[in-house]
Image (cartoon, rainbow, N blue to C red; front, side, top):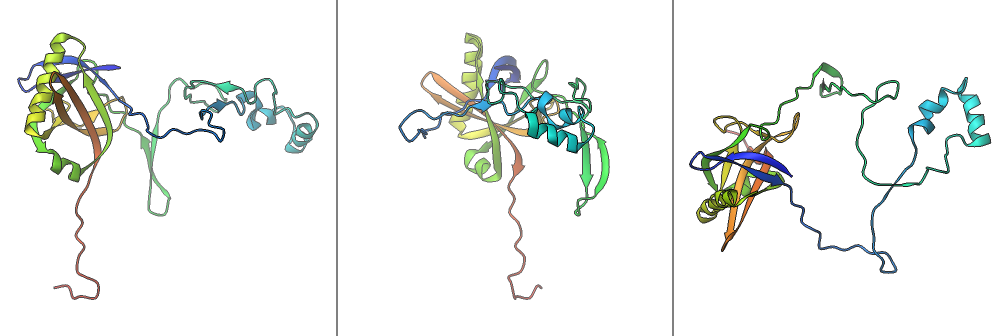
Length: 242
């Protein structure tokens, strides 16, 4: 659970928690006998058994093929099919060693797929962590208008970490709940910058929704980078354009 700084309508800031909340599915998958269904990961191969590694041990592909038919060097019965748990993604260099410094390159192609330009991919810094502050802009929009204008990709929930931050967030949720609106929030000193959650991450527009029920509250940060626009259909088929 990450912590972020956010301001309220009085321009006072506080540190709160922000996390993604996954709603459990109502659908339960079972096997034919009614047993529990689950997904597991099994080890298919490791680096030492890969084609690129094995090919370095033989003079040519013919010799390698004969070795494969004779002794199955690409199979290790001790590890193949072994159940594995959590994994991490690593980048390797040309020598299959772990690359600790990776520079991402952006390749721009034309409509035919030909490369036009190659440049270093810009890595924007996160503006919601550390000393960065998410700004309360006061720009509210009716919910019925927002849901028709944007496609929301992610939702994050803001949570308090103390009694003081409970009051802080509850008042924010109450203000939004009573106005039946969602408020645009952003990064930077003026709050007009898109929100970037991680270094090199996707920039998003943020809209804050608040709900309250008696002494409980819910603050949801809706994130979007896609705006829906009405396209001009032009003149009807077969008609004359004036």
